[in-house]
Length: 382
Ligand SMILES: Cc1ncc(COP(=O)(O)O)c(C=O)c1O
Image (cartoon, rainbow, N blue to C red):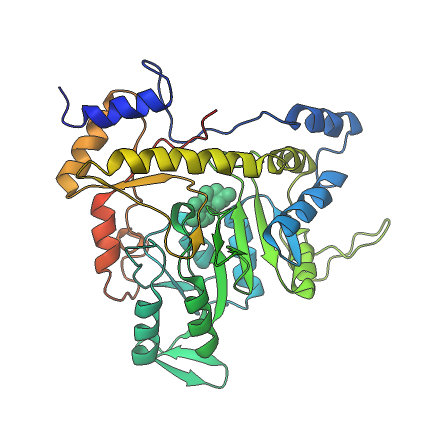
């Protein structure tokens, strides 16, 4: 009998699946998806022109309370554009957390900038305001054009906290610290659509926020991302940059800078419009599932990660924490070998060979979490 059989059995009971494979997260298509896709195909506007992109952007802006939203091919591209719009240049540094998905750090690298790793909080799994403030006040100096790292002599242009697995980090404190040190705040809210901090949607605290609609997220466009703006002019710049920097004209092809083909196709947006109609329903179901897990794990040695203070979380991927790396690995082996998909958190970014020489603060909390965190099946259950 497996040591963690009782957890595996509970997950099978929750999903009413005594035998079949249980994935970590599956998309749901229970609304107008086929209708809108058919409409899109019938119109022949499946690519870079069509009404669904505008509708999807407007719906996301309304839902998140942003002034404007700009749709992209995926969240990674959206992060790249966000950093460019924040003015990140070659040889700048960008602060982020080591406990994140590779896309956050890849986007920094696409700009020719270097990531600088600051620890997370154990209670949020997101960037720690205390660690950020400590690093900035001790290790940087202010110059006319911004904040400079004393040891590397490089400019720290931006900071990218991430709302891990949908749980908001302490973003208002981070925002104040960034403001004080003249560092642009870009929120990686790829995992946190429908998550709110003190009543405000994640991704709307900084200069720009980024969402992802990859197939593993709560709502999907197949592949897709979104930039969130409070500044309309910046949003217009984003639209221009993501559309090959083409000057709008009825028939002329003129481009006024090096742009990107990052615009979301209409067919993906059609899917997104149908998906967002059910977002609140899905989140409600996911929060119920989290409650079931929370009650179950109360009686066990393994702890269930609950939404941080002042937050309403979408509980994208549920998290349990083991006492040690050995017990974590035992559970991962037992659950995956029995067809219940579970995953450890990402290898810390500072441990990957591309980023092992990047500067970092003390990463004790990130390391602590890396050894213990496991994601368990989290699909909304009907
Ligand atoms: C934290 C984080 N940032 C960025 C991304 C990138 O999004 P995409 O897969 O849409 O490129 C993802 C997810 O996929 C993510 O989890």
